[in-house]
Length: 126
Image (tube, rainbow, N blue to C red; front, side, top):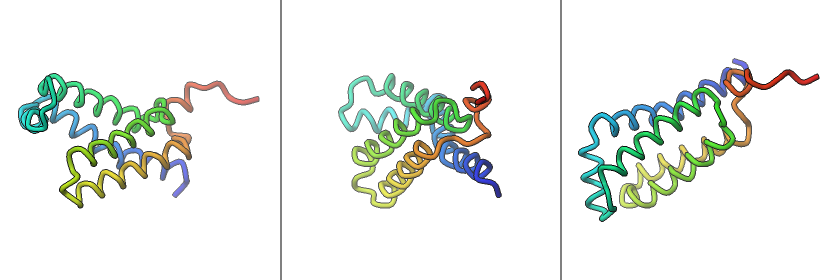
């Protein structure tokens, strides 16, 4: 399999969790809003919608390769932050978040590959 195809597969696998989870937060925010409220975070429902939107937009950006080198480190930081805030008492979930962060950082350093919107939008090098 080519490096570019593997990068596309990696982007899809890393992003699917964010897209699915984000849509879940947007369509039924009650569970996450309740959990955020229990953490004493203000505006839990509004925050849930904001997080859901960020997850969907970030996930789609990763899949399409749009601004990948900017978005991937943000999602890596998000994974670490939510791991430490929400999953600290759940070692498997924390390790999952840290592993996702590592994957996003690898994408940030290697780039999206040929199968990406940004690649298509750039003029060819002379």
